[in-house]
Image (cartoon, rainbow, N blue to C red):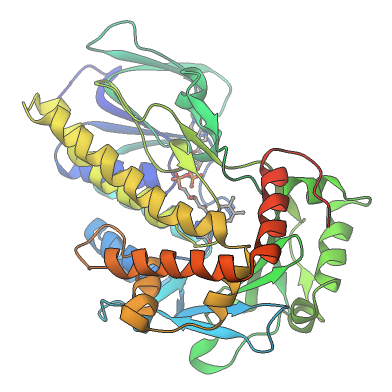
Amino acid sequence: MTTSSNSCDVVVLGGGPAGSSIATILSEKGWHVEVWEKEPHPRFHIGESLLPHTLPYLKKLGVLEEVESIGLQKFGAELVSPYHDESVTLFFSGAMDKFHPYAYQVRRSEFDNILLQNCKKKGAQVHEGFEAKSVDFSDPNLAVIYGKNAQGMTVNRQARYVVDATGRQTFLANQLHAKRRNLHHNSASVFGHFEGVIRHLGKDEGNLTICWFEHGWFWIIPLPDGVTSVGMVCWPSYLKSRKGNLEEFFWQTVHGSLPMLDRMKKAKAIMPIEATGNYSYQSSVMMGSQFMLVGDAFAFMDPILSSGVHLALHSGIRGAEVVDAYLQGHADAEQKARDFETAVKHGLETYSWFIYRITQPAFRNLAMAPRNFFRMHEAISSVLSGDVFGATPVKFPIFLFKGFYYLMAMLDLKANLVQYRRRKHAVEGEPVAS
Ligand SMILES: Cc1cc2nc3c(=O)[nH]c(=O)nc-3n(C[C@H](O)[C@H](O)[C@H](O)COP(=O)(O)OP(=O)(O)OC[C@H]3O[C@@H](n4cnc5c(N)ncnc54)[C@H](O)[C@@H]3O)c2cc1C
């Protein structure tokens, strides 16, 4: 461990789920860890829906009970399609592994604060209001991180290892010129928190709702205390086509969808409506002997499968083992790093196949009429539960599902080709004909 007052073993940039989790595990292992977080917590963050297989990560970090106390239980995801007569709910209990039948919906300000306070408790030094500006890697043994504190004064620290967990700010990927736009996907989002959104009753109250519309899909995420997170994800060109302000645009789109209007007739926004655009990317570099990118700082695709926090915690917790091996000078550090990179990319690739096809008619038809031939439905529910890194045998049924999807697309070639072309134009940034 390092001892100088201006140096430490690891500086973690960003105190979201990825940063807090890697800082927690490395502190538990006895390393001197500092976390630099730009915004004092608690702070607003979008992305409130967790997955069942995230709960074991929370248990490992020691925060599961606290998270349970602020969350609303979620047993499944309801799918609503304007092209089908009835909605369908996919329950996590229908997954192959029956031991994880629920997750939670959480206010991210509270959830992220629990994780950040936890890494403090485990020994990390957390500097809220510290914003990283640059890192000098010219000394191969000691990186120097430069930034600003909450008072605007310049700060710097030397560290043997730097973890970038700055989320969609992608601090290191920008510095290394490694950020690459995802050539297969592109979307934008408009969202807010609301009161008065109609909820389902009983056990279904906390379920996520996904509702397709012509230019994308909406989410409805019920939070505790009657507040609901609602947002739409659409092609960037649809967002650019708006005439009025964001709020008017959001409500116009809600009014264009009968099922959404039914749920939001009496809803009122309790925060200004926000938007984020063009947000699918991946860094061409994940790590080196002095740095690692975790969570959204490495890649982000799309929120539809609620996989962001799950992937962030997975990379934080597993990434800590790699950083530990580098710091200890273990001979197998490079091998651990390669295994880690493969696992992270496997998670992203598993989700991306579904994300790229979710607005295709063939996909929608399959999702709205789930069948368990060869355990396909169980395997899809497993992916939706976040069971993508374990030993559950999802591979073969998912392979069959993909084959089935292509068959369905062939059988309705015209509709699927039209949508495929619209999507392609949208990804390439061209105006999309309706
Ligand atoms: C519209 C939308 C909806 C989403 N919905 C969901 C959902 O329902 N479920 C889900 O699981 N995921 C969802 N996500 C994704 C999810 O929010 C992210 O994947 C997740 O927050 C990633 O965690 P992270 O720790 O990598 O990054 P973040 O949570 O973004 O944390 C990064 C932290 O770094 C700090 N920071 C940034 N720059 C600097 C700097 N220079 N110096 C110091 N600190 C810095 C930021 O202040 C922030 O606190 C959604 C994303 C979007 C865009």
